[in-house]
Amino acid sequence: MGRQRISLTPAAQDALTVLGQQIRFARHDRVWSMAELAARAGVSENTVRAIETGGANPSIGNVFNVAVAAGVPLFNADRDELDRLARDGAARLALLPTRVDEPRRKDVDGDFDF
Image (cartoon, rainbow, N blue to C red; front, side):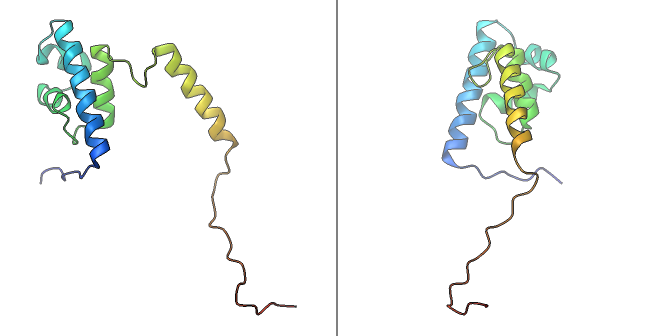
């Protein structure tokens, strides 16, 4: 049984296309074949091809590994900045409640309990 086809919003598809293009430009700037980038990222050549063409099926981890191997900055940040952003995000998440309940509905029918 094959992988399920993923339905993307236009914005998500555009983002995948742009990231794939950036990876391909970086690969060409380094004069690497798809096979060489695949070996450096630890993925198959078909995965690199799918990523470079904006495919939705490669895992996010594989996409990020290929981008990093090609030298494409993620989130417009270098490695140190990404590390700082991850630490700041973890600190902010620690402040959030562990659970979010739906707001309680107010008694709007006028039948107040006294």
